[in-house]
Amino acid sequence: MSKTYGFDTLQIHAGARPDPATGARQTPIYQTTAYVFRDADHAAALFNLQEVGFIYSRLTNPTVAVLQERIATLEGGVGAMCCASGHAAQIMALFPLMAPGRNVVASSRAYGGTITQFGQTFKRFGWTARFVDMDDLDAVKAAIDDDTRAIFCETIANPGGYITDLDAISAIARDAGLPLIVDNTSATPYLCRPIEHGAALVVHSTTKYLTGNGTVTGGAVVDSGTFDWSASDKFPSLSQPEPAYHGLKFHETFGSLAFTFHSIAVGLRDLGMTMNPQAAHYTLMGIETLSLRMARHVENAQKIAEWLEADPRVTEVTYPGLASSPYHARVPRICPKGAGALFTFGVKGGYDACVRLVDSLELFSHVANLGDARSLIIHPASTTHRQLTETQQRAAGAAPEVVRLSIGIEDADDLIADLDQALARATA
Ligand SMILES: *Cc1c(COP(=O)(O)O)cnc(C)c1O
Image (cartoon, rainbow, N blue to C red; front, top):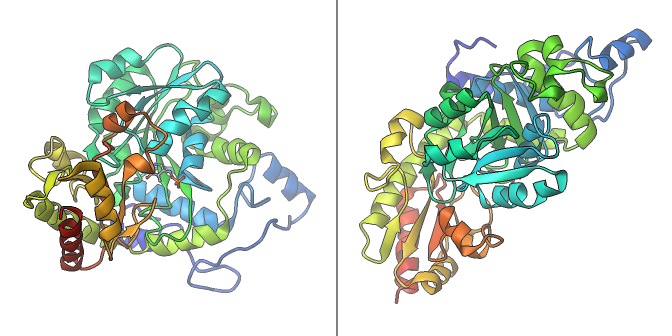
């Protein structure tokens, strides 16, 4: 699809075409496991990756393929791989790059589940994660060594609303010959396109804003196509003969699409973290209205953050759209259309008042999710960030005395009224 179309057009049309068999205008849910080969030569060509097509839905499915193309287009990448969840996407992004003994330098402010996945579970693969404060550029440089294979951060880090200086981090990655992987879940390509700031790969939990209605989990890895996997000997899965694919050299054969082909032909084939076509359908429906929803999410978040900041019952508000945020100055450069819709605030009375506040809200749902059309609240220290130490919780912006809001697209005045009555009860 022509890259000259605007975002609002691409979010509806990219990757989709009327169904060739029936003319169906909406992308059908291709609920099938396998695809009939034309003949034996066709089957062999597909298995040799000499021809692109559908073999088996663990690897590829036409509904999922439309979503992959749509997300790649919106992010300005050359290709994308969709998988079962955001956490699956993180493994799928690192899998072609890592090996036992290798490390990833990651933001200490990443999503709580990411810190647990990287810090604990990856150890079983022999991978290590070095967590650093991405605002401390010297610490980022110092953490990189000969075994580092990637740098990982988030555009807008949940829960504290930290905006990462992607330009500064990608410059460090470039100097070190390493790919920068950016989790763009909280920003979405409507607010930020990390590839334009030097990211080699972009990962998403499509569970959140891209789907936008809290129906299905999913993940995506978008390939910028710009990283030279053969510039060093650090990425043998992509530059050297791949033993799991009869010696195929992915970079030599597929050029800028090497990563995408590897993550489907080897990653999905062998790790099996596949997105199902139903999930792809719900996410395609959601993406059609992404820009409209994000504009409202951001507008509501700004109004509510301003209202909270002016309220004497509130101790602090971490929204980067507020002039008081240390990340406010980065908004025009990194997220020019707005600072997202996730932030934390502190309540006078600390931990106990936070718990009472959560229990007193009527319109906000108390759930472990974000990026829903509905407004959501959670107390991170007792839920999403529970597995972290208090030091890690504070570093991640999830101190025990704060609650996190994910502002939805309802009427802002109704949300403010709900917060007002709950604050009254929490601080009574
Ligand atoms: C939710 C989330 C994830 C994990 O995604 P799942 O779809 O829940 O596996 C990763 N990163 C961020 C920023 C998230 O918000």
